Image (tube, rainbow, N blue to C red; front, side):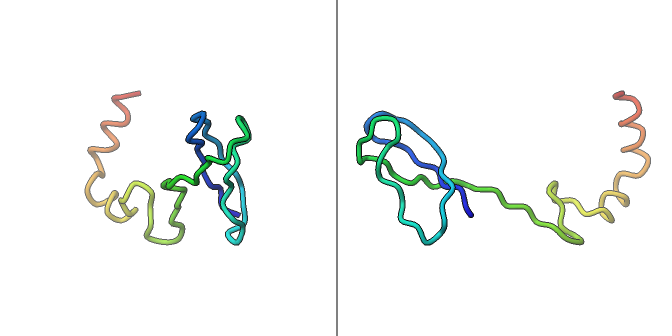
Length: 79
């Protein structure tokens, strides 16, 4: 189930709620009980898994071609 971010226009309270996609958005703030809460747009978490996809945008074949001895030398001198 996705996690949605909410913010209250009245008191400025911000919180997260785990809801089903089919559920309606919350409108009541849990702090001030006013009906001024709105769902916020957020980036969310997105992770690519599998061969060829890496979080740092470099593949294992590209890293081994370009940084062979330089990467090893820089790593050992910094520690």
